[in-house]
Image (tube, rainbow, N blue to C red; front, side, top):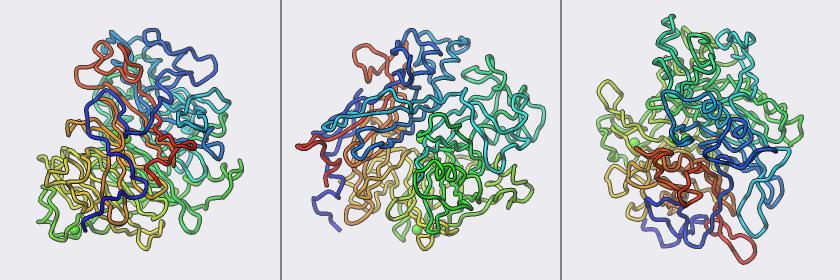
Length: 605
Ligand code: FEO
Ligand code: CA
Ligand code: CA
Ligand code: CA
């Protein structure tokens, strides 16, 4: 049907035009402010950031590098006082230090990098008439780094596969790293996915045992020296010295930001892979379900169903109980079946004759507690080498499953499948109905519906909501909405929902379309379903991460601004956010719309 001119509720903002500016570009009539930048003080005693004089001691008390996931947890009714929790996914040393010698990093540079990883918890407050959240010192403020102790929980805790000379218990890990996206649990804690942890471990090629070497390679852990050379300064990053250290990363962690003295945990029951994130929903009977994607080409989508039920209320007692929910349950992996003749899925991305990329699927059990459902693997092996288990049960290889989250009202699941330029390459799998394009540069967004709308169901139906790219191109699809009216999009990464039920999508690699990354809104119901609208764009070289869409404020993390080929701290191409000749700094940005009485609703009423 030809849509009328009225935008869907929540998307009534002037569309931002795709661009390549060195700025965060927002709709006309809206305002923005920097919430916190790399190096800004988080803990008491932190010095002000000084790019040329950074130290590890300073970095341990300052906001880390490359913010990715963000959660904004209001501590009052109006959202004037909040806790901001962010992941610091990784470090880009050649943008953190001028004159950086990648063959010979100094020990201090490496220690700065350890302190710039992890997470930050920081109180952010705003005045009533502005959305400009700003950091405050508070007893909640906290930095999690590669030195923070984590307790390993769940069925693989204490496994021989997790024991090292430094930790014969197999239950105590120092730090977390490559924390990409995450989720806020219904009980108010933070989940965070340890993603590309392969890049930190050296000398896999020198490991004597062949099975171990094969398993390391299945997780992308290969070669000798690492890019960052951390193994020179801490032997736990050298696999010839502590081979199991790599098994202690690649988990979903849980942090209680309301208790600054709490020990964060690593949940082994959710399996070990390149976790983009984990998002939890509550089933009708009180059990909880967590979804997680393994972000690599040809990897899988997973689901976990807890044994125990959630306790309501925000007492310390309830939270303590709920923080054990992700330790006991069943881990599943997704298998998708298309409903169109395979010949119609020719890799071109053109719609099959039934008009949709769609079909059904099932959740295949991998392990429950100490019980394995996978031939030839113990339960502990399933949890620690989850990719291998999913291979054995013939799960469906997807195009880089990133963020995945259930819609708070409809219960439908949305998953960003970022891209996969290797699909269809010689020796690689070709197009399948859920991954319908070869050389897939721009990705797709999947909509999945559990059978009977039951979160506990083991069967589902699915369809592609978006096949991303340039809407003028015949291999794109926007839920059937007229394509001459939508914004171009490439490489969907994070998803969020607003209170109207619209889906918001942030991107990572829109450079594939020659434009900067951004944040988009798309209605999921009614006549404007598929009307994708660009809300903001981030500076050149940056990725848009961690969108939080509240009624009156949108926040995003601007990760790795200015990181384009050939650029570095010696040759910066971005001066965002500080301007002038400054170095670019990964930062969190807030966007709001001023109104007559305080703030207007984002996207209208
Ligand atoms: Fe760190 Fe999957 O993006
Ligand atoms: Ca079909
Ligand atoms: Ca991501
Ligand atoms: Ca990404």
